[in-house]
Amino acid sequence: MPKVLTGIDQIHDHLHLFEGKRIGLITNHTGFNKQFESTIDILYKNTNLVALYAPEHGIRGDIQAGETVSTYIDKKTNLPVYSLYGKNKKPSYEMLKDIDLLVYDIQDVGVRFYTYIYTLAYAMESCAEYNKEIIVLDRPNPLDGLDVEGNLLNLEFASFVGLYPIPQRYGLTVGEIAHLFNKEFHIECNLHIIPLKNWKRHMFYHDTGLPWIAPSPNLPSLSSAIVYPGTCMLSGTNISEGRGTTQPFELVGAPWIDEYALSKKMNELSLSGVYFRPAYFIPTFYKYKDEICKGVQVHITNHKEFQPVKVGLSLLYTIMDLHKEEFKFLPPTSETVKHKFDYSTGDSYIREQVYSLEEVWDRYEKESQQFIKLKTKYHLY
Image (cartoon, rainbow, N blue to C red; front, side, top):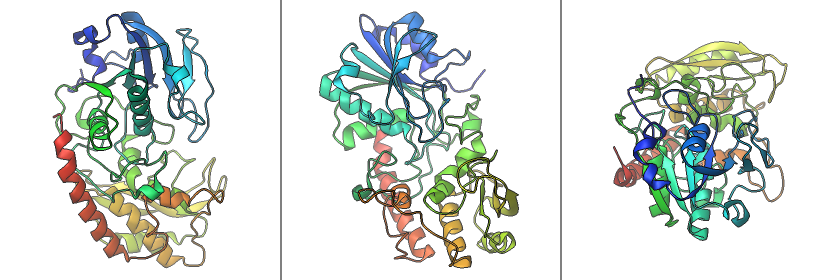
């Protein structure tokens, strides 16, 4: 039995919120209760569920990162599934006209550039615009509810991987971040949160007793999710962040990297809670498909001390220093789009190499402390 009960585990205590209303549900394969029943099936049996809405990766989690999903019929319930990834990231009037109440139940990973929280934010905006209620079924932050890391996003770089000035690792549950979005960024929708039970702010996901269901294809394990806030920043470079391997975000490399020099330099930094081992891997898709990459595996030795954002920045600067000729930031895909790297880091000053690594660390720490003061206003636990 899990120590922590999620929002959906307590749905029967809150059914009065659903009575007499036509229900829409934003969820995916991570929406399930302690008996492994899906949120779709639970609401279909207990409420007037009339429509489903799919985030990135689809309603069943079977779509790879970046692939668009079309509107279709869910074969199990025969309900329409509207895509909220691709052209229609924000629910339209047509998508919402037949519902009174929108429910959100997706396991988040607690990272600014993970798209599910912006699916929620856009849904909240639409609910405010079209006078619909919204309920968030809360779920824990896998990376704990205390630690904050990173810079505050510069709104010039706002996108679907970062809409608001929050840090890379923000230390709030999905219900709490919805509450913050609603108030701080003036959405002002009719928001209700069905809270967690028995969750404590110091808990990482493995402390909750809840089973890990990969929230997206490239986060197969909690270790991948813990490293993700840092090494995912490398997505906008010609370094492989391990996508296409069984250990995405834990493996970092490229065919041209000196794996021994990199591991030596990284371990000399004496970063807390981590060891860097020389490693080799061959991605089956994405960057360097079918090529042997050399680099490091990021081994977490103490997850409570480990600082993923600091590790990601350190890897970037160390590789840039060791491989000045080979290293590249990926170019923008069009004249109207900024560098992918800038979207994930929330500004351009790292790519433009305005600051040293130590200066970036200092800036990130100051902005993290600034956000900590703000976020405590929205703590539900």
